[in-house]
Length: 72
Image 1 (tube, rainbow, N blue to C red):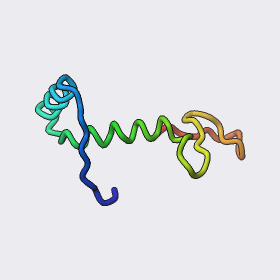
Image 2 (tube, helix red, strand yellow; image 1 turned 180 degrees about the vertical axis):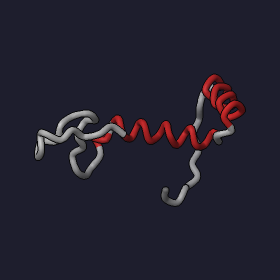
Image 3 (cartoon, one colour; image 1 turned 135 degrees about the vertical axis):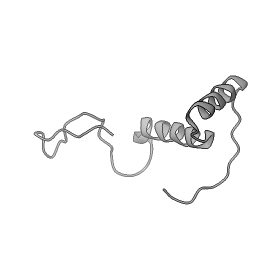
């Protein structure tokens, strides 16, 4: 994981309450849940980002159609 930078994010009171509940039950920091959520969004919309074309999870690679790409 790279260097972390600070940012401000506004969330609803319900989101805050649910994140606090998750934190209390799991002891995982709220910031970690937010980072995981950001990673999910980046993965979902990765085709809109510059760089190599990403293959959908569970699809076969066009170069080697006999190999299935494993899910993350």
